[in-house]
Image 1 (tube, rainbow, N blue to C red):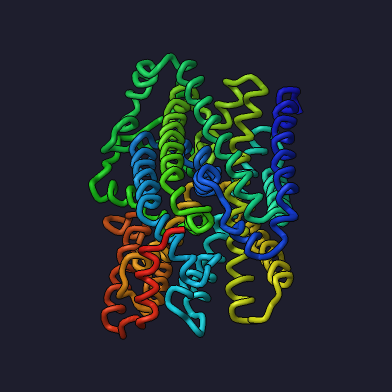
Image 2 (cartoon, rainbow, N blue to C red):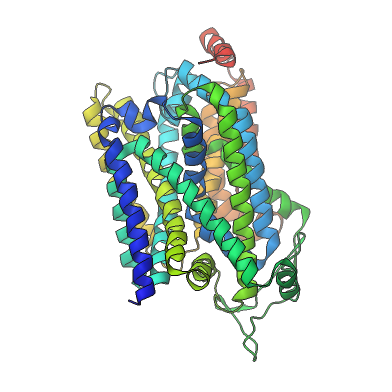
Length: 520
C-alpha cells in the first residue's frame, strides 16, 4: 500500500474510532429500554433531528450515486432528480413533520411507523402492522445492500483491496455499531456525519472547479458532448457490452443526444414523492423533542439538502471535464468522487473526503438496520407472536433480526458490478409507494378507513414490483420511474376502498381532531 493510501486509511480509522466513541457514550442510556433504543425517548433537538434525518436519508448515494449519474449521462437526469428530492424534502418537513409528531403521541405513543399505522386505525388483529413491518424488512434489506456496495467500492477504489472482502468488513462494522448504541447513538453520529458530508462535497466542488479553470472553461469543455449540459436532453455514451468506447485519439465516444420529454421530467421529479414514505426520515419527526422546534429543523434540513444536492450534481459534471476517460461503465462512474478526492486533494484532506463517503454509508445503513430490526421485534414479535415479551426479549430478537437482515444484504451486495443508484431507486420507490400515500391520508383525511389503509399499502408495494419487473421493460410510456404509477395507484385504491367501506369509529375521528390541535 502506498504511503498516501496509508495516510488516508489512518484518517478514516480516526473517524471510525470517533463514531464508535459516540456509540459507547450512548450505549447505557440506549439499552435502558426499547423506547430509548428505537426512538431515543423523543429527546432529539432541532439540529440533531434535521441533520440526522438528511444524513440517514441521503447515504453514500449522495456522494457516489448522484455524481455518477451526472458523470455518465450529463445534467438532466441528475438535476431533475435533485430538484424532485429538494421539493420533496421541503414539503415533507412543512406538512408531515408536525402532524406526525403530534399524532404519533396521541395514537398510543407510537414508537415505530407500523406502530403508528396500527394505532391510528385502532387495530385488534394487527394486519396493518404486519404488512407494514414486512415491507420494511424487504425494502430496508435492499437499502442495506446499497450501503454495503458503497463501502466495498470505496475501499476497492482507494486501496485496491478485494471488493467482496471490504464490503463484508464494512457490513460487520455497521452491525457492531448498531448493536452498541441504538437510535440515540445513530442520531448523534448522523449529526456529525451530516456535517462531514456537506463539507466534503463543498471542498471537492470548489477545488475541482478551480482545477478545471472555472465555470466558463468547464462549460466549453462539456458543450462538445451532445446533450450533456441540456435540461431537456440527455447524453448517450456509446457502449459495447456495457463499456463506453473510445476514439482513436482516446476520447470517449457519445451518440446523438436523447430526448428528455415532459413525461420523463415528471417521472424523475417524482423522486420527491418518496419522502412521504421514508421510515428513516419519518421516525425523526416522531423523535423530535417538541413540535415547536420543527420549524427550525425544517430550515436546517432544507439548506443542507439544497447545497448537498447541487454540489453532488456539479461534481459529476466537472469530473467528466477533468477525467473524461477515467470511468467507462455506469457502475464505475459512481467512483468519480473518490477519484477527484484522491487526485486533487492533499492526503489528509482526501482522507477527510473519503470519511465523508464512509459517514454517509454508516449513517444510512445503521438507520436501515435498526428500523428493519425494530419492525420485526417490536411489531411482529411483541405485537403478535409474544405479546407479553419483556424489553430484554424484544431487544434480543431485534439484534438477531439485525444480523439476518445484514446477511441477506451482504448476499445482494456480492456483485461488484452493482450500480448504487439503481439499487437505491428501487427501494426508494418501494417505501414511497407503500407508505407515502397511506401516511398522507392517515394524517390529513379523517374518512380514511382501515380497509383503505390495508388495500393502499398492498396496492402500492405490489405495483412497484409489477411495474419494475413486468411493465417497465416494455419501454415507451411504461419506461417511467415505478414510484409515480405505484404512488398514484395506491392513492386511488385508498380513496375508493375507504368510500366503499364503513366510516371510521367516533373514537378514531376524535383522535384525528385531537392530533390537529395537539401542542407539546
